[in-house]
Image 1 (cartoon, rainbow, N blue to C red):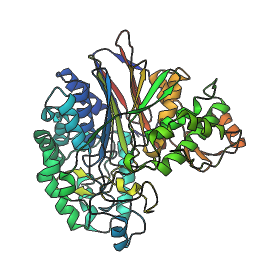
Image 2 (tube, helix red, strand yellow):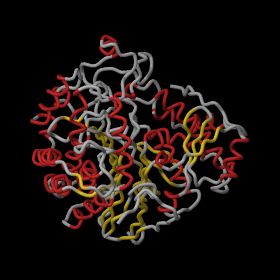
Image 3 (cartoon, rainbow, N blue to C red):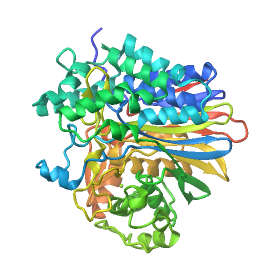
Length: 536
Protein backbone atom coordinates (compact mmCIF):
# COMPACT_ATOMS: atom_id res chain seq x y z
CA UNK A 1 0.00 0.00 0.00
CA UNK A 2 1.25 3.44 -0.92
CA UNK A 3 0.48 6.20 1.57
CA UNK A 4 2.20 9.08 3.36
CA UNK A 5 2.19 8.69 7.18
CA UNK A 6 2.89 12.40 7.57
CA UNK A 7 -0.18 13.53 5.56
CA UNK A 8 -3.21 14.31 7.75
CA UNK A 9 -5.95 15.94 5.64
CA UNK A 10 -8.70 15.59 8.25
CA UNK A 11 -8.93 16.74 11.86
CA UNK A 12 -8.94 14.00 14.47
CA UNK A 13 -9.45 13.94 18.20
CA UNK A 14 -8.41 11.83 21.14
CA UNK A 15 -10.29 11.09 24.32
CA UNK A 16 -8.82 10.73 27.82
CA UNK A 17 -7.93 7.18 28.88
CA UNK A 18 -9.18 5.68 32.15
CA UNK A 19 -7.69 2.73 34.04
CA UNK A 20 -7.50 1.46 37.61
CA UNK A 21 -4.56 -0.91 38.07
CA UNK A 22 -1.84 1.04 36.28
CA UNK A 23 -1.00 3.50 33.53
CA UNK A 24 1.95 4.61 31.38
CA UNK A 25 1.83 7.67 29.13
CA UNK A 26 4.66 8.60 26.80
CA UNK A 27 5.53 9.71 23.27
CA UNK A 28 5.99 6.24 21.74
CA UNK A 29 3.32 3.49 21.85
CA UNK A 30 5.72 0.54 22.10
CA UNK A 31 7.57 2.21 25.00
CA UNK A 32 4.30 2.80 26.87
CA UNK A 33 3.40 -0.87 26.42
CA UNK A 34 6.88 -1.90 27.61
CA UNK A 35 6.25 -0.06 30.86
CA UNK A 36 2.80 -1.59 31.18
CA UNK A 37 4.25 -5.08 30.67
CA UNK A 38 6.57 -4.49 33.64
CA UNK A 39 3.58 -3.46 35.78
CA UNK A 40 1.79 -6.67 34.81
CA UNK A 41 4.86 -8.71 35.77
CA UNK A 42 4.75 -7.40 39.33
CA UNK A 43 6.70 -4.18 39.01
CA UNK A 44 5.56 -0.86 40.43
CA UNK A 45 5.29 2.58 38.82
CA UNK A 46 9.01 3.17 39.41
CA UNK A 47 9.97 -0.03 37.61
CA UNK A 48 7.60 0.89 34.78
CA UNK A 49 9.17 4.33 34.47
CA UNK A 50 12.67 2.84 34.20
CA UNK A 51 11.53 0.26 31.63
CA UNK A 52 9.82 2.94 29.56
CA UNK A 53 12.79 5.32 29.78
CA UNK A 54 15.28 2.63 28.75
CA UNK A 55 13.01 1.53 25.91
CA UNK A 56 12.78 5.11 24.66
CA UNK A 57 16.56 5.21 24.17
CA UNK A 58 15.96 2.50 21.54
CA UNK A 59 12.49 3.40 20.28
CA UNK A 60 12.98 7.17 20.06
CA UNK A 61 16.74 7.76 19.68
CA UNK A 62 16.22 11.09 17.89
CA UNK A 63 15.11 12.54 21.24
CA UNK A 64 17.16 10.79 23.92
CA UNK A 65 19.80 8.17 24.53
CA UNK A 66 21.90 6.22 27.01
CA UNK A 67 24.41 9.09 27.01
CA UNK A 68 21.91 11.73 28.18
CA UNK A 69 20.59 13.15 31.46
CA UNK A 70 17.40 12.51 33.42
CA UNK A 71 15.25 14.02 36.18
CA UNK A 72 12.42 12.43 38.14
CA UNK A 73 9.70 13.31 40.62
CA UNK A 74 8.46 10.23 42.49
CA UNK A 75 5.36 10.05 44.67
CA UNK A 76 5.61 7.07 47.00
CA UNK A 77 4.91 6.39 50.67
CA UNK A 78 2.86 9.61 50.87
CA UNK A 79 5.83 11.77 49.94
CA UNK A 80 7.29 13.43 46.84
CA UNK A 81 10.96 12.74 46.08
CA UNK A 82 13.15 14.48 43.52
CA UNK A 83 16.08 13.03 41.60
CA UNK A 84 18.55 15.21 39.69
CA UNK A 85 20.52 12.95 37.38
CA UNK A 86 22.12 15.64 35.28
CA UNK A 87 25.86 15.35 34.88
CA UNK A 88 28.50 18.02 35.44
CA UNK A 89 31.14 19.33 33.09
CA UNK A 90 34.44 17.41 33.01
CA UNK A 91 37.05 18.22 35.66
CA UNK A 92 39.60 19.28 33.06
CA UNK A 93 37.45 21.77 31.14
CA UNK A 94 37.49 25.54 31.65
CA UNK A 95 36.97 28.78 29.72
CA UNK A 96 40.73 29.20 29.39
CA UNK A 97 41.15 25.61 28.17
CA UNK A 98 38.61 26.20 25.40
CA UNK A 99 40.19 29.51 24.43
CA UNK A 100 43.55 27.77 24.13
CA UNK A 101 41.93 25.43 21.62
CA UNK A 102 40.68 28.43 19.64
CA UNK A 103 37.03 28.45 20.79
CA UNK A 104 35.24 31.74 21.46
CA UNK A 105 31.89 29.97 21.96
CA UNK A 106 30.98 26.48 23.10
CA UNK A 107 30.14 24.41 19.99
CA UNK A 108 26.92 22.45 19.59
CA UNK A 109 28.43 19.24 18.24
CA UNK A 110 31.46 17.02 18.74
CA UNK A 111 33.22 16.03 21.96
CA UNK A 112 33.70 19.55 23.39
CA UNK A 113 30.11 20.11 24.70
CA UNK A 114 29.78 16.58 26.13
CA UNK A 115 29.02 16.45 29.86
CA UNK A 116 28.82 13.41 32.16
CA UNK A 117 25.71 11.36 31.25
CA UNK A 118 23.29 10.84 34.13
CA UNK A 119 20.50 8.66 32.68
CA UNK A 120 21.96 5.19 33.46
CA UNK A 121 22.69 6.34 37.03
CA UNK A 122 19.10 7.57 37.32
CA UNK A 123 17.74 4.15 36.37
CA UNK A 124 20.00 2.42 38.88
CA UNK A 125 19.24 4.90 41.70
CA UNK A 126 15.47 4.70 41.20
CA UNK A 127 15.58 0.91 41.01
CA UNK A 128 17.71 0.59 44.14
CA UNK A 129 15.62 2.94 46.28
CA UNK A 130 12.06 2.30 45.13
CA UNK A 131 11.89 -0.54 42.59
CA UNK A 132 10.47 -4.01 43.18
CA UNK A 133 12.11 -5.89 40.30
CA UNK A 134 15.83 -6.29 39.46
CA UNK A 135 17.15 -3.67 37.04
CA UNK A 136 18.28 -6.44 34.69
CA UNK A 137 14.66 -7.61 34.35
CA UNK A 138 13.28 -4.09 34.01
CA UNK A 139 15.60 -3.35 31.07
CA UNK A 140 14.63 -6.51 29.16
CA UNK A 141 11.96 -4.88 26.95
CA UNK A 142 14.48 -2.28 25.77
CA UNK A 143 17.12 -4.96 25.16
CA UNK A 144 14.67 -7.04 23.14
CA UNK A 145 13.66 -4.11 20.90
CA UNK A 146 17.32 -3.24 20.32
CA UNK A 147 18.16 -6.84 19.37
CA UNK A 148 15.12 -7.70 17.27
CA UNK A 149 14.38 -4.28 15.83
CA UNK A 150 11.08 -2.45 15.48
CA UNK A 151 9.20 -0.40 12.84
CA UNK A 152 9.89 3.33 13.12
CA UNK A 153 7.09 5.75 13.99
CA UNK A 154 6.25 8.77 11.77
CA UNK A 155 7.24 11.68 14.03
CA UNK A 156 10.48 9.92 14.94
CA UNK A 157 11.56 9.59 11.30
CA UNK A 158 10.87 13.25 10.65
CA UNK A 159 13.26 14.21 13.47
CA UNK A 160 15.73 11.52 12.37
CA UNK A 161 15.85 12.98 8.85
CA UNK A 162 16.49 16.50 10.22
CA UNK A 163 19.40 15.18 12.31
CA UNK A 164 20.80 13.23 9.36
CA UNK A 165 20.76 16.36 7.19
CA UNK A 166 22.47 18.39 9.93
CA UNK A 167 25.22 15.85 10.60
CA UNK A 168 25.77 15.24 6.89
CA UNK A 169 26.39 18.96 6.47
CA UNK A 170 28.92 19.23 9.32
CA UNK A 171 30.48 15.75 8.97
CA UNK A 172 34.09 16.50 8.12
CA UNK A 173 36.01 14.12 10.39
CA UNK A 174 36.02 10.62 11.82
CA UNK A 175 34.48 11.99 15.03
CA UNK A 176 30.88 11.62 13.75
CA UNK A 177 31.44 8.49 11.66
CA UNK A 178 30.00 6.13 14.27
CA UNK A 179 26.72 8.09 14.28
CA UNK A 180 26.24 7.32 10.59
CA UNK A 181 27.19 3.67 11.07
CA UNK A 182 24.64 3.33 13.88
CA UNK A 183 21.75 5.51 12.74
CA UNK A 184 22.14 5.63 8.94
CA UNK A 185 23.51 2.17 8.07
CA UNK A 186 22.00 2.32 4.56
CA UNK A 187 23.51 5.70 3.78
CA UNK A 188 20.31 7.63 4.58
CA UNK A 189 17.85 8.30 7.36
CA UNK A 190 15.32 5.46 7.71
CA UNK A 191 11.66 6.02 6.84
CA UNK A 192 8.43 5.47 8.78
CA UNK A 193 7.56 1.80 9.01
CA UNK A 194 11.11 0.60 8.29
CA UNK A 195 12.76 -1.76 10.74
CA UNK A 196 15.79 -0.56 12.73
CA UNK A 197 17.87 -2.38 15.34
CA UNK A 198 21.17 -1.94 17.18
CA UNK A 199 22.91 -4.98 18.62
CA UNK A 200 25.51 -2.73 20.28
CA UNK A 201 22.74 -0.80 22.00
CA UNK A 202 21.30 -4.08 23.28
CA UNK A 203 24.61 -5.22 24.72
CA UNK A 204 25.19 -1.89 26.45
CA UNK A 205 21.75 -2.01 28.07
CA UNK A 206 22.41 -5.57 29.18
CA UNK A 207 25.70 -4.53 30.82
CA UNK A 208 23.96 -1.64 32.58
CA UNK A 209 21.23 -3.93 33.88
CA UNK A 210 23.59 -6.69 35.04
CA UNK A 211 25.90 -4.28 36.91
CA UNK A 212 23.37 -1.67 38.13
CA UNK A 213 25.11 0.82 35.81
CA UNK A 214 28.60 0.17 37.26
CA UNK A 215 29.83 -0.90 33.80
CA UNK A 216 28.88 2.51 32.47
CA UNK A 217 30.66 4.55 35.14
CA UNK A 218 33.53 2.35 36.31
CA UNK A 219 33.82 -0.57 33.91
CA UNK A 220 34.04 -1.55 30.26
CA UNK A 221 31.73 1.17 28.93
CA UNK A 222 33.55 3.89 30.87
CA UNK A 223 36.83 2.73 29.34
CA UNK A 224 35.37 2.89 25.82
CA UNK A 225 34.03 6.42 26.39
CA UNK A 226 37.39 7.52 27.80
CA UNK A 227 39.39 6.15 24.86
CA UNK A 228 37.12 7.78 22.27
CA UNK A 229 37.11 11.11 24.12
CA UNK A 230 40.89 11.24 24.29
CA UNK A 231 41.21 10.28 20.62
CA UNK A 232 39.08 13.23 19.53
CA UNK A 233 40.28 15.94 21.90
CA UNK A 234 37.41 15.73 24.38
CA UNK A 235 37.55 16.60 28.06
CA UNK A 236 35.31 13.82 29.41
CA UNK A 237 37.32 11.08 31.13
CA UNK A 238 36.75 7.82 32.98
CA UNK A 239 37.66 9.68 36.18
CA UNK A 240 34.70 12.03 35.57
CA UNK A 241 32.42 9.05 35.06
CA UNK A 242 33.69 7.21 38.15
CA UNK A 243 33.12 10.26 40.35
CA UNK A 244 29.50 10.74 39.31
CA UNK A 245 26.49 10.15 41.57
CA UNK A 246 22.92 11.35 40.92
CA UNK A 247 21.51 13.68 43.55
CA UNK A 248 18.33 13.23 45.58
CA UNK A 249 16.84 16.70 46.01
CA UNK A 250 13.90 18.39 47.70
CA UNK A 251 11.36 19.45 45.05
CA UNK A 252 10.35 23.12 44.91
CA UNK A 253 6.78 24.37 44.51
CA UNK A 254 4.44 27.27 43.96
CA UNK A 255 0.92 27.39 45.41
CA UNK A 256 -1.51 28.06 42.59
CA UNK A 257 -5.25 28.52 43.17
CA UNK A 258 -5.55 25.73 45.76
CA UNK A 259 -2.98 23.39 44.19
CA UNK A 260 0.76 22.95 44.65
CA UNK A 261 2.79 22.75 41.45
CA UNK A 262 6.11 20.91 41.93
CA UNK A 263 9.36 21.05 39.99
CA UNK A 264 12.98 19.97 40.41
CA UNK A 265 15.14 22.81 41.82
CA UNK A 266 17.93 24.39 39.73
CA UNK A 267 19.98 23.61 37.70
CA UNK A 268 16.68 22.82 35.93
CA UNK A 269 14.45 25.50 34.44
CA UNK A 270 11.32 24.34 36.30
CA UNK A 271 11.78 27.44 38.45
CA UNK A 272 10.76 29.51 35.40
CA UNK A 273 7.36 27.81 35.23
CA UNK A 274 6.82 28.42 38.95
CA UNK A 275 7.82 32.09 38.70
CA UNK A 276 5.41 32.60 35.80
CA UNK A 277 2.55 30.93 37.68
CA UNK A 278 3.34 33.07 40.74
CA UNK A 279 2.95 36.16 38.57
CA UNK A 280 -0.34 35.18 36.84
CA UNK A 281 -2.04 33.95 40.01
CA UNK A 282 -2.49 37.59 40.99
CA UNK A 283 -4.76 38.16 37.98
CA UNK A 284 -8.42 37.21 37.65
CA UNK A 285 -8.62 35.35 34.35
CA UNK A 286 -12.14 34.67 33.12
CA UNK A 287 -11.76 32.88 29.79
CA UNK A 288 -9.11 30.68 28.21
CA UNK A 289 -9.35 32.00 24.65
CA UNK A 290 -9.46 35.67 25.64
CA UNK A 291 -6.91 38.22 24.45
CA UNK A 292 -6.27 39.41 28.00
CA UNK A 293 -5.55 35.86 29.20
CA UNK A 294 -2.96 35.18 26.49
CA UNK A 295 -1.39 38.63 26.91
CA UNK A 296 -0.86 38.15 30.65
CA UNK A 297 0.45 34.60 30.20
CA UNK A 298 2.98 35.73 27.59
CA UNK A 299 4.14 38.71 29.62
CA UNK A 300 4.54 36.56 32.75
CA UNK A 301 6.63 33.92 30.98
CA UNK A 302 8.84 36.61 29.43
CA UNK A 303 9.62 38.06 32.85
CA UNK A 304 10.23 34.61 34.34
CA UNK A 305 12.57 33.64 31.49
CA UNK A 306 14.54 36.88 31.84
CA UNK A 307 15.25 35.99 35.47
CA UNK A 308 15.86 32.32 34.67
CA UNK A 309 18.39 33.02 31.94
CA UNK A 310 20.29 35.37 34.21
CA UNK A 311 20.32 33.39 37.44
CA UNK A 312 19.69 29.65 36.88
CA UNK A 313 22.67 27.34 37.07
CA UNK A 314 23.79 24.79 39.64
CA UNK A 315 21.91 25.98 42.74
CA UNK A 316 25.01 26.46 44.91
CA UNK A 317 26.47 28.76 42.23
CA UNK A 318 23.40 31.02 41.89
CA UNK A 319 23.82 34.62 43.04
CA UNK A 320 20.19 34.74 44.29
CA UNK A 321 18.21 32.05 46.10
CA UNK A 322 15.26 30.06 44.84
CA UNK A 323 13.16 31.32 47.75
CA UNK A 324 13.86 34.93 46.77
CA UNK A 325 12.79 34.28 43.18
CA UNK A 326 9.62 32.51 44.35
CA UNK A 327 8.63 35.00 47.03
CA UNK A 328 5.19 36.63 46.83
CA UNK A 329 6.83 40.02 47.20
CA UNK A 330 8.99 39.52 44.13
CA UNK A 331 6.09 38.04 42.16
CA UNK A 332 3.98 41.09 43.02
CA UNK A 333 6.74 43.42 41.81
CA UNK A 334 7.15 41.53 38.54
CA UNK A 335 3.36 41.43 38.08
CA UNK A 336 3.22 45.22 38.41
CA UNK A 337 5.38 45.54 35.29
CA UNK A 338 2.69 43.97 33.10
CA UNK A 339 0.67 46.66 31.33
CA UNK A 340 -1.64 46.80 28.33
CA UNK A 341 1.12 46.45 25.76
CA UNK A 342 3.96 44.01 25.20
CA UNK A 343 7.12 44.72 27.19
CA UNK A 344 10.78 44.11 26.45
CA UNK A 345 11.78 41.53 29.11
CA UNK A 346 14.67 42.27 31.43
CA UNK A 347 15.87 40.39 34.50
CA UNK A 348 14.98 41.79 37.89
CA UNK A 349 17.13 41.99 41.01
CA UNK A 350 15.48 40.11 43.88
CA UNK A 351 16.99 40.81 47.28
CA UNK A 352 19.17 38.68 49.27
CA UNK A 353 17.19 28.77 32.67
CA UNK A 354 15.53 16.67 22.18
CA UNK A 355 13.75 15.09 25.00
CA UNK A 356 11.31 12.36 26.01
CA UNK A 357 8.82 12.63 28.86
CA UNK A 358 6.83 9.88 30.51
CA UNK A 359 4.38 9.49 33.37
CA UNK A 360 3.51 6.28 35.23
CA UNK A 361 1.13 5.25 38.01
CA UNK A 362 0.17 2.00 39.74
CA UNK A 363 -2.68 0.70 41.88
CA UNK A 364 -0.68 1.15 45.08
CA UNK A 365 -0.62 4.93 44.62
CA UNK A 366 2.96 5.26 43.35
CA UNK A 367 3.37 7.84 40.58
CA UNK A 368 6.40 8.97 38.57
CA UNK A 369 7.12 12.03 36.47
CA UNK A 370 10.26 11.29 34.44
CA UNK A 371 12.14 13.16 31.73
CA UNK A 372 15.24 12.17 29.77
CA UNK A 373 17.20 13.85 27.00
CA UNK A 374 20.33 14.05 24.87
CA UNK A 375 19.49 17.69 24.01
CA UNK A 376 19.06 18.96 20.44
CA UNK A 377 17.77 15.62 19.19
CA UNK A 378 20.65 13.15 19.01
CA UNK A 379 22.82 15.42 21.15
CA UNK A 380 26.47 15.96 20.26
CA UNK A 381 26.42 13.70 17.21
CA UNK A 382 28.95 11.50 18.98
CA UNK A 383 28.22 7.78 19.21
CA UNK A 384 30.87 5.79 21.06
CA UNK A 385 31.82 3.01 18.61
CA UNK A 386 30.29 -0.43 19.17
CA UNK A 387 28.19 0.72 22.15
CA UNK A 388 25.12 2.54 20.79
CA UNK A 389 25.87 5.30 23.34
CA UNK A 390 24.91 8.66 21.82
CA UNK A 391 26.44 11.39 23.98
CA UNK A 392 24.59 14.56 24.97
CA UNK A 393 25.74 18.13 24.28
CA UNK A 394 24.50 19.89 27.44
CA UNK A 395 27.77 21.82 27.77
CA UNK A 396 26.59 24.04 24.92
CA UNK A 397 24.34 25.84 27.44
CA UNK A 398 27.24 27.15 29.52
CA UNK A 399 28.26 30.79 29.16
CA UNK A 400 31.82 31.76 28.22
CA UNK A 401 31.37 34.97 30.26
CA UNK A 402 33.23 34.39 33.57
CA UNK A 403 30.91 36.86 35.34
CA UNK A 404 27.71 35.02 34.38
CA UNK A 405 26.08 32.75 37.00
CA UNK A 406 26.05 29.95 34.43
CA UNK A 407 29.66 30.39 33.30
CA UNK A 408 31.63 27.32 32.25
CA UNK A 409 33.73 25.83 35.05
CA UNK A 410 35.11 22.39 35.95
CA UNK A 411 32.72 19.87 37.52
CA UNK A 412 29.71 22.21 37.26
CA UNK A 413 26.12 21.51 36.21
CA UNK A 414 24.80 23.85 33.55
CA UNK A 415 21.38 25.49 33.13
CA UNK A 416 19.21 22.52 32.17
CA UNK A 417 16.10 22.56 29.98
CA UNK A 418 14.43 19.25 30.91
CA UNK A 419 11.88 19.40 33.71
CA UNK A 420 9.34 16.91 35.14
CA UNK A 421 6.24 18.33 36.84
CA UNK A 422 3.88 17.08 39.53
CA UNK A 423 0.60 18.38 40.96
CA UNK A 424 -0.76 17.93 44.49
CA UNK A 425 -3.75 19.30 46.41
CA UNK A 426 -4.03 19.37 50.19
CA UNK A 427 -0.88 17.22 50.41
CA UNK A 428 -2.50 14.49 48.29
CA UNK A 429 -1.21 13.52 44.82
CA UNK A 430 -3.12 14.68 41.77
CA UNK A 431 -0.47 13.32 39.43
CA UNK A 432 2.51 13.71 37.11
CA UNK A 433 2.64 15.97 34.07
CA UNK A 434 5.24 17.29 31.69
CA UNK A 435 5.78 18.97 28.33
CA UNK A 436 9.18 18.38 26.75
CA UNK A 437 10.89 20.43 24.06
CA UNK A 438 13.86 22.67 24.87
CA UNK A 439 12.91 26.12 26.12
CA UNK A 440 9.25 25.40 25.37
CA UNK A 441 9.08 23.27 28.50
CA UNK A 442 8.29 25.83 31.23
CA UNK A 443 5.91 27.52 28.79
CA UNK A 444 4.19 24.20 28.21
CA UNK A 445 4.05 23.50 31.95
CA UNK A 446 2.41 26.86 32.58
CA UNK A 447 -0.16 26.41 29.80
CA UNK A 448 -1.07 22.83 30.78
CA UNK A 449 -1.42 23.72 34.48
CA UNK A 450 -3.63 26.71 33.68
CA UNK A 451 -5.70 24.67 31.21
CA UNK A 452 -6.29 22.17 34.01
CA UNK A 453 -6.84 24.43 37.02
CA UNK A 454 -8.17 27.70 35.58
CA UNK A 455 -10.13 26.34 32.63
CA UNK A 456 -11.12 22.84 33.88
CA UNK A 457 -9.95 20.85 30.85
CA UNK A 458 -9.49 17.08 31.06
CA UNK A 459 -5.93 15.75 30.52
CA UNK A 460 -6.25 15.16 26.78
CA UNK A 461 -7.90 18.52 26.12
CA UNK A 462 -5.34 20.30 28.31
CA UNK A 463 -2.63 18.89 26.03
CA UNK A 464 -4.51 19.34 22.75
CA UNK A 465 -5.28 23.04 23.26
CA UNK A 466 -3.42 25.29 20.76
CA UNK A 467 -0.12 26.53 22.22
CA UNK A 468 1.97 29.63 21.93
CA UNK A 469 5.72 29.93 22.47
CA UNK A 470 7.62 33.07 23.37
CA UNK A 471 10.85 33.11 21.37
CA UNK A 472 12.71 36.33 22.22
CA UNK A 473 12.10 40.04 22.74
CA UNK A 474 8.45 40.53 21.67
CA UNK A 475 8.28 37.60 19.24
CA UNK A 476 5.67 34.90 19.91
CA UNK A 477 5.25 31.77 17.79
CA UNK A 478 1.73 30.32 17.56
CA UNK A 479 0.39 27.03 16.27
CA UNK A 480 -1.63 26.90 13.03
CA UNK A 481 -4.82 26.18 15.05
CA UNK A 482 -4.35 29.21 17.33
CA UNK A 483 -7.41 31.54 17.06
CA UNK A 484 -6.59 34.10 14.36
CA UNK A 485 -8.72 36.88 15.88
CA UNK A 486 -6.78 36.53 19.15
CA UNK A 487 -3.48 36.61 17.27
CA UNK A 488 -4.52 39.82 15.53
CA UNK A 489 -5.50 41.41 18.85
CA UNK A 490 -2.16 40.41 20.37
CA UNK A 491 -0.40 42.13 17.46
CA UNK A 492 -2.27 45.30 18.37
CA UNK A 493 -0.88 44.97 21.91
CA UNK A 494 2.66 45.06 20.54
CA UNK A 495 3.41 41.35 20.28
CA UNK A 496 5.16 40.20 17.12
CA UNK A 497 3.14 37.12 16.14
CA UNK A 498 4.58 34.43 13.88
CA UNK A 499 2.51 31.45 12.72
CA UNK A 500 4.29 28.07 12.61
CA UNK A 501 3.71 25.80 9.63
CA UNK A 502 3.44 22.73 11.91
CA UNK A 503 3.38 21.89 15.61
CA UNK A 504 6.80 20.25 16.01
CA UNK A 505 8.22 23.18 18.01
CA UNK A 506 5.47 23.27 20.64
CA UNK A 507 6.53 20.38 22.83
CA UNK A 508 5.19 16.93 23.58
CA UNK A 509 3.36 16.31 26.84
CA UNK A 510 1.83 13.57 28.99
CA UNK A 511 -0.54 13.73 31.96
CA UNK A 512 -1.91 11.22 34.47
CA UNK A 513 -4.38 12.42 37.10
CA UNK A 514 -5.65 10.22 39.97
CA UNK A 515 -9.12 10.46 41.49
CA UNK A 516 -8.51 10.69 45.27
CA UNK A 517 -11.71 8.82 46.15
CA UNK A 518 -11.86 5.96 43.63
CA UNK A 519 -8.18 5.72 42.73
CA UNK A 520 -9.15 5.71 39.04
CA UNK A 521 -6.43 7.06 36.75
CA UNK A 522 -7.14 9.41 33.84
CA UNK A 523 -4.43 9.97 31.23
CA UNK A 524 -3.76 12.10 28.20
CA UNK A 525 -0.97 11.84 25.64
CA UNK A 526 0.48 14.28 23.16
CA UNK A 527 -1.40 14.49 19.86
CA UNK A 528 1.54 16.35 18.28
CA UNK A 529 3.64 13.20 18.25
CA UNK A 530 3.38 9.40 18.30
CA UNK A 531 2.11 9.53 21.90
CA UNK A 532 0.12 6.81 23.63
CA UNK A 533 -1.52 6.03 26.98
CA UNK A 534 -1.33 2.37 28.02
CA UNK A 535 -3.74 1.46 30.80
CA UNK A 536 -4.51 -1.67 32.75
